Image (cartoon, rainbow, N blue to C red; front, side, top):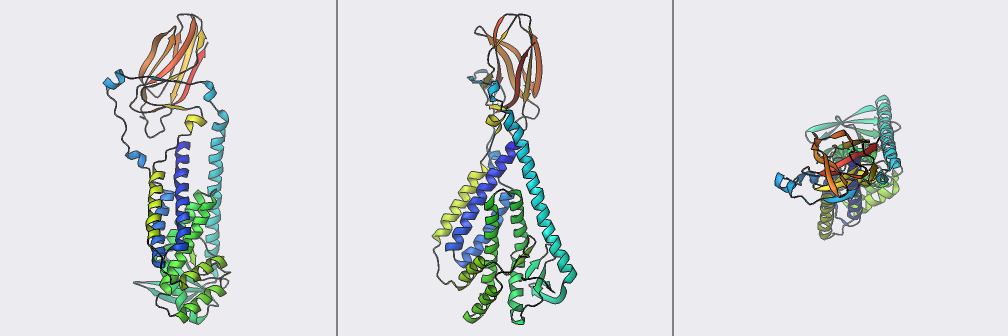
Length: 407
């Protein structure tokens, strides 16, 4: 479980870094239409942060025949007690618990903020007609105490307007919120909020979320001002400037029109920009994104090999214990446990051979398929016993316990 969790975080966080860098570069050099297309691509890729690809499953497992097993070349590994690091095994569940607490807390805050805003709107909002949006009509409500127009709701979105909105701004504001609806921006913001909740410890997750929100606003601005003349664009930019400090009611389930100062500056620059940029940036960034996505999908972390008492060894390899001196007639108990949680493991057990070396001679004790076993036998000769396990399975074996107790 811990292996899978760490692999998940590695894949998702590398993709977060990649998408964030691409967003920053596109905001700096991309054309308007390119930004809209890139926003849609990033929206789709953001789902892979939550559900990363795992292309390792496409790699075929090695098929081993009986002839291969019989002619195996054995490589020895020493499995000693120094490989046990109990402190690490103890801290891993603690870190997982901290992460779960963080996820629960951030989920609670997100839901609480939305429900508080929804209760306020339901209590004070008044109907103000409908706004046509293709074949669908969006309800429009005015609400005192709301500082920024917003599209609110998941299944039945409603346009919420401040009660003091100017009459000449009504159409452009509703049009802006309409494009949020057509672009499915509320769903995308929910996805980004889930990304932030899962990766609450990663500051780049929040930066990526803010960049995606800014791209969504730029995309809507571009559609709103598409048919405007310079004077109308100037008035639209003036409206954004006058309200740039508002927008505090923005939640994961809403899309606000007004933004903070630095975002408004970027939006205005995009509205007034006329210089065309090269498509070379698109090719480079798409190549970077796809290559990073593919590389991340092949990440497979196995922290147990070095950070805990488990040990993974391949087909044909051997694990040995340090020599133990045993007197004739002494009883020896050997405990073997295999970790079968990995995808490559046979859940019914793996084929292993257990035995020991004494005076240069190999003595076999057990050879069969098992998930774990406790074996007792009596030494028939004084001397050092070097116990071993051989991997006769078709693939890797993860050994979680290999203990020898002399009574």
